[in-house]
Length: 296
Image (cartoon, rainbow, N blue to C red; front, side, top):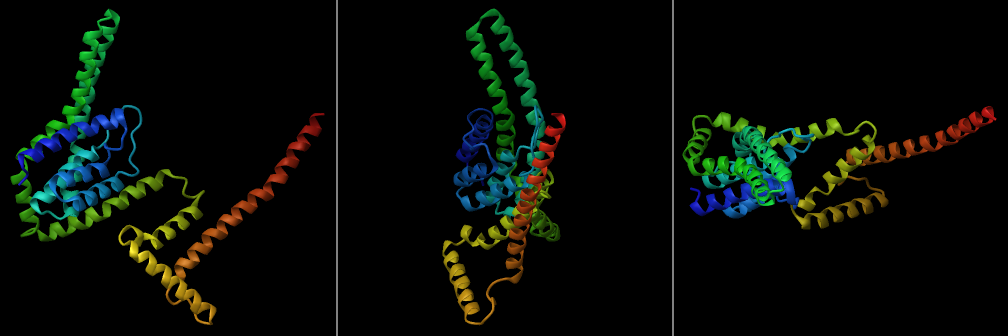
């Protein structure tokens, strides 16, 4: 069960994080930070960071422009983490069953907050015309309160009254609907890939394909750095041993030849593009000089 003091702290944080996102920009209004704080309050930071990181990757390529509303990934992370810890739900299931749906539903509360903020904004305009600065300050902060309530109210209601529903869902997914739970676990694990796909859709991938390949391979090779620092030393020792074996007439049995091939291809492509640009530069300069001569 979620304790009353945890509900209060998480509700207050839900209001704080939207204000941080709009005003202070300390990164406390991000999905990763939301998972960290919620996990800290609930007593399991590992689950909080896992859900927060997964949600952050899921929305990696999602952006808003102008006054557009977007899914509230921060509140979705908060709800998913709180119930995953209190109900023993699998983090990937919590992400798919609670995190993403809650984040999507809170689009409507985001719109409500914007409407209320517009109302108070017009009141502030009227106060400026009347030079009523006391009323202006009150209406200005009421606009901030409307933003905070657009997150605090749904989070409080979900945490205070949603525990039985979540426990029933968890029991069903681990019981008669275990097949559905397994599918949702897979979906939750695949959601970060969706975020990467959206991001790559907007990036100039074709222009910088070599850097993409190189970065991916290097990140894959150094992935153990994020799970076990000691593993890096082991990888270096393995690479050194493989190099010594190759020098003595052996082969690179300890290293993936595909990895080496991808790194070589990326470097070769970068070299080709740079040489092509250098070769084109004199021709372009000569063409400009020819145009100048014709004008004279």
